[in-house]
Length: 103
Image (cartoon, rainbow, N blue to C red):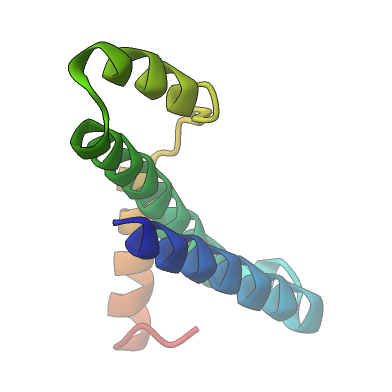
């Protein structure tokens, strides 16, 4: 479970880094779909990582410790509202427009 979390964190870092490279090379407007894809991926992965950490704590903790440990994990979880519906819509419209997901 921890390895899966680390893989997701690495994937988020890689996606952000690659998108920043695109923005530097092409400009923000030309990279808007890549930005949307990255925002969507990071939003979903962020939630997934914290869910896996909570589940891992359930397996490892005694019943009385679990609540405290989950509160500790949640103190690092900053809920930033991301309109994933809007991001999906922009990506889908782009895919329809260009006949694929090319960025």
